Length: 89
Image (tube, rainbow, N blue to C red; front, side, top):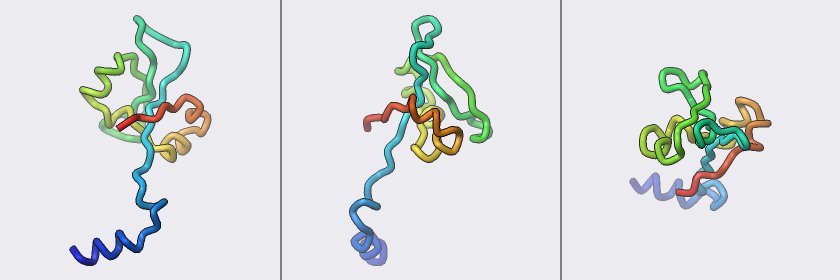
């Protein structure tokens, strides 16, 4: 335990911050009034899709399927980051 505390104290403040998380929400495209979101397939994180579910459903049912780090988005295609909306914790 002491080793972890020492390691934490030796880590610069900038590196201690939690990484920001994002939803990728495509603008101006809806289906039945719901926005379109980029989604990770549960069985394989390499497979992506889109979902028209309401935002409250996304956060209640499978939030991990829709939330990406900045690097994950840029690894797919950095143009998707134009549509990223930060998830407030």
